[in-house]
Length: 281
Image 1 (tube, one colour):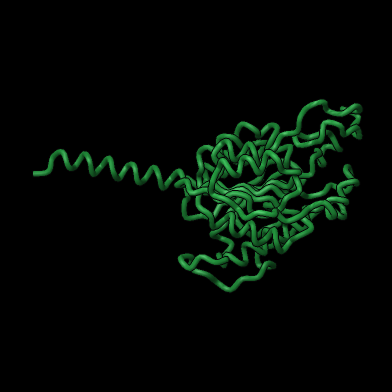
Image 2 (image 1 turned 60 degrees about the vertical axis):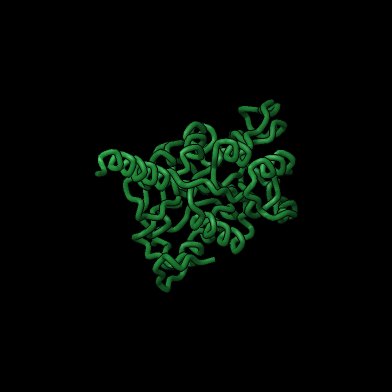
């Protein structure tokens, strides 16, 4: 997918990778997600200085250091606040926010809700492995309530897991997709589409943690493309997501809400016109 309104340059995925080598555990799904992100950037054809990658804290939040774009490694749970402020101040930049399920849905949960609601034109990519990998394997907001392999929750969490796509839809996100780190090509295409779609785009990527959740290696055999096309009807999307098994992949929702800044500008222009009309001779 390309946008002919964006001046393109001939770029390769390697042109967006920094000299810093990832220090993730061998077999971590985040390696493939980084590859998908740089591939999507190359497909967009924008030079690195027109892109910004913002993150919080966690294994997946290291991604800004592994790219040549503008980047900011922020504090825990605050990546969306930083990304929103940057996009509003510099609307000319393409702003991508990266993080994990703990950073995004626990300490950052309130920011997640309001970022969806504001609908600023940024893209949020969450690598979801249902565990706190960097802090040695505690249960996260998306962990199954019966998972007993954490010393802190030896009998399971006893709480229903957070459903990111459902929450995002209810809060007003304008684009929803789910990818799998084992499908770097398909995930790259989805990220590109998410970036090009106006408004707040949210992409959940199932990214196994082979160190603390080795059973997630089976995800490769469990993910499957969604059997229906993406919808722009939020009610249909809600019904689909509420009956989803968590392993449907692909673009699930394409909304048509006008992004925050565009709406603010159009409202301001209309108010100016109305005010001027009061004094027309």
